[in-house]
Image (cartoon, rainbow, N blue to C red; front, top):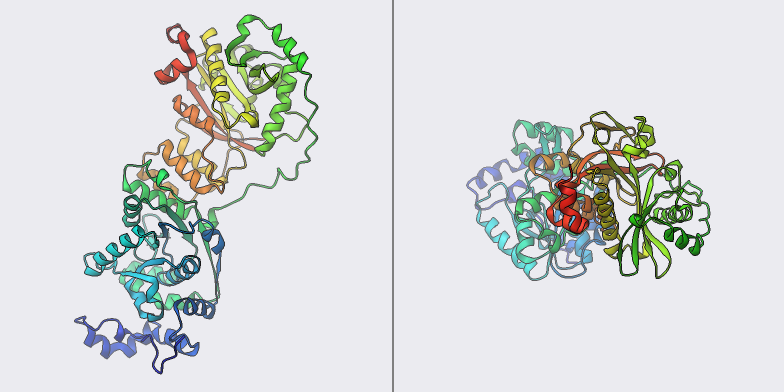
Length: 587
């Protein structure tokens, strides 16, 4: 630290430009403008706290301490940033000045190769100019901007960490959106990420400027620039929260052909970290008393039951695995073991009943389609399937399990024709890493439908475990539901979602890649949307509504239906085999 007789930074309007045509006028009017704009107060803070000449990290820390700014969530951001290699951090711009200092100080402490693309106005503090690559967003064609873009590209190309505020200017009140938010994001960060194969990290910075700032800004946009220093001084004694999504890796970014898509997804993920829209699940699962799992069923009893099943209920074989279907009165021991394995599997997803096994009255009336491993004499996965024409012989919709979750109107498909109600699916944990379990279940379903071609449509729910963040479930709900006719949830899923998401879906035709990328950006463990959801989507499913299953630990479930004859040809061949043409042509 070097102390100088004169302050290192000349905090005055007169020092802004020495080459501007207005420089003479600025020098004459400087005392008045310094007072009006709050520069005098800032200068007093600078001098009275001996900030002059400090190195950039010490200066930033002391300035934030003097202003009484408490930064929360810093470690969560640091944990998401690679220790080395190229990376681009994109942030919203709520204040206009202080966020650049906060981010620069925080990330430089973690990685000394941090550079922040910032407004040339921050040159006012010479002590911290080394943090920044300066640009002038008010003059897009200015030479300084061309130079800044080249510096940014070079920095990232040389494995540096770059921070960009893509809005380029402070957030403002937008009358068409009726809220304070960033203006349109510049695509520079997204373009740099694609060119340099650098990951993107969206970071949200909480807070707003004063209401006066936004009122005057609506009168004339340049008033916002003039008020920035006064707003900086108003931030005193405030906590600012930082929130980061997961890294958008080059692999994720390559899913999208358009830079606009990447830019808009990064912006949305940034705003989805706004703590005002982050609500945890109700703490009902942890209060549940989990009973001990029941003893496993005698294997010889199960194999004996399988041997007694009619041949047509033995649907297919693959290596040591066979797929069967049966009813509780035919295979009571197999069904009991299925309920035991269901409870074990569902507990790992925070969905268990808490009872020794997962069972209810519907196990006695529904069909059970399951995979049996002859080598180890064990069941590895199953579906519970309701045949609606058999269950509703007296038009009693209460015979359907999902009538507890949804109000099925006469126009819904299960009231119009024979359908299969799919539910309670599982694959035991040790087989969840392989594809063959789910494939065998779907081939088994295909074989059963080929045997019983009156069933053209299957419907059911995909459970969205509470291991998912509520934001992810809300995104899946808003993005996937495409046909609400004929049904509504008895207990709807209600979770507020950031208005930026509504802006996003109004500007984009959402596809499964959008939803997948957003969910992987939100989830702490980076998990994707459920594989079963992807599978139904590939089959051409229609998604009807999201409901809460009050009988299943209040787990959200997304109701869907698949008209199997309309599924893609490739999948029909896979699941129906040589029975495909006969099934499709059935009248």
